[in-house]
Length: 441
Ligand code: SF4
Ligand code: SF4
Image (cartoon, rainbow, N blue to C red; front, side):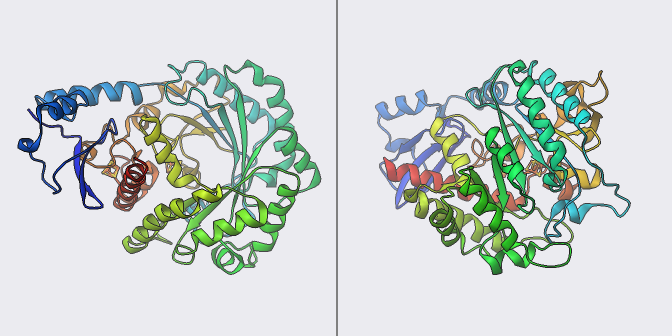
């Protein structure tokens, strides 16, 4: 008999616990210390630990358990998201923008037309109709994201597409939630009306108050964009449209997350906020010290704001997974859960790849195109901590998702390496989740 390789001994507030990284079971030990001692256990305790797969008879038992988890979470076909990149143009010039910083000089911009949108939705319908089973997200609707560049630079086609989607959405096996991700620079009465009518969830990028936001998020003339964005947020909220904020964290705002969220909540009734760490490029990177500060602050942000109803989406994504005792096999939908369509109709996995045309492998105009037959989809679909050897003994195994495959590709030339910065963040999140869960017991 031995301790499972998926069990970690953790010390939290001077008490030692066993934690199973795949079942999320927590077992309080009588004696404190970082080593696990069989001799201190009663036969009743041993029985419980065996029942929860914390004690196993052989390493093979662990391997079989991991394989069974892979079959449920990784070896399934399940697309639930369509990303329509309405244009690759943007009227902002944010210095940390990953797409801007990786675009080649010869890059040709284009706009999506209604025909391409129709073909994209047809491909989406064809693909979701072949989903294996709704194992993970069965209660959630499918999602269509309007994204870019700045999608509303192509607002006429955006609005035309809404009427089309309204007509065909009953052909889908489940509801469809529409989402718009915008920089907040383009808005008018007609757009507000469409957004309201079609119950579109709007995500807007805002990095902080004026001085903070304007440091990196500038327009093409180098002018700060805060006033324009704030005007859009106010207009949307006055029209009672749900707005979520996406905030990119760097040195300039890493210590003001709590204050910023409370301000958004008090002034505009915004409760949904996601904090994103920077995607490193040659032009801009974040260092380990910043990643540690970011990770600590995300965890304390959750504790300090949860009573105000603020949703820290970055933390909650993992915390809710933990509470539901499911697993987070992927950090995002790119590993075979989403279809991304470029303005000209090319099919890919990750919108961030548009600047370099990476991981785009098909075309919506090709009637014979089969998403599931693509070797790229097959490879990305397998890319999860549940299949990466280096992740097997990690505390974050079941709650991490493996970080951003595209960042791994950009940093290391392969999607299969784990990103050191992300790992610091993921382990901190899991530790914070356990602290939170133990405090609730
Ligand atoms: S692969 Fe990375 S950049 Fe692409 S969607 Fe996933 S997290 Fe985002
Ligand atoms: S934190 Fe890093 S090593 Fe651990 S499971 Fe996630 S990607 Fe793997």
